[in-house]
Image (cartoon, rainbow, N blue to C red; front, top):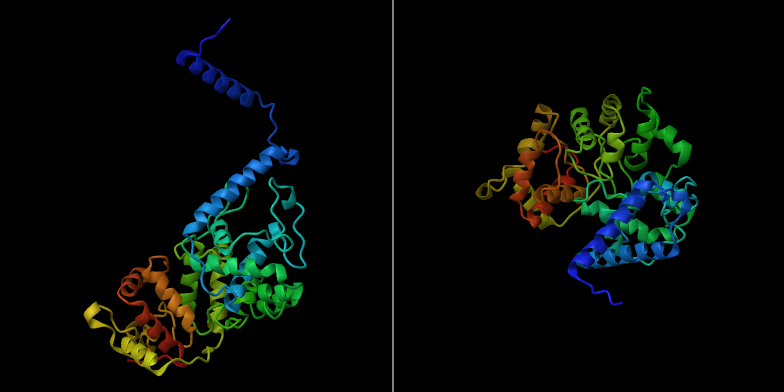
Length: 370
């Protein structure tokens, strides 16, 4: 007997399969427990799809020329220690056995880094991996932070445990570092302060050259506003938002007060004379034809004394200032009550003008006046 395949019969067959699948799912017979693992063919297929997707989407990504910068490695290591090491392990630090029971289990990146290119790593870190437990970057627009993590991941397999601990926790490590970082606090934020100190130092001077901004000398008002903006997601950072968000408001205020009490420590820096001259011109006179006011009208000595919510720029790392201006210009940076003003100003600055202004402020040891 010959059975003719008609459109109606095909549709009924598909409907029967769908109904059967729904009934099977409704029955609850199929286990969803992570302990059962995947069939080998399922695991192969899922990884094949994931690798193909990452490879294709990474084609539009261009890696920076230098991913070996000590500042990049230090920034990446600091976040990796708290955000990634519990799942993936680290040099001298095994994976958490609880996380190893995930499905799929996170790869031990210190021992088995995989054969990903920097561009593919960027894609994974920035967007995460669906259905795997690998989260996306908290602030995906902060590509500078994502590249810092990629730089660290590229270098980690060759790191000794000692090098890793220094990069992740600073020159002082472990319990000693925590005690030092918490020294001088009233007790409310001792644990949170230890987390801050390993990157910014207990004295707020930072470490690893330009890896972290100098906090010492900033006003308590400005620091408290910045930490609150990070905690509320108004200032975007995949590195700063997680620790700020898990700290209560009272502890954030105490941390701000601690760093505000530290004496200012300008970072010794130098720059080309022509660049400094252009930066001084912009800082003192602005760019009237572009509607850019003088920087010192808000960041000069008199303005800082008048309004403690303005940040102190003099003596800060030039690279940090330049990066912040670029983030303002690209709409990737929020913050306190003056964020709209800074966004407008930065949009009107050309990158070379921002570089000049940043260099000039970085070389000032005291707050300049107009």
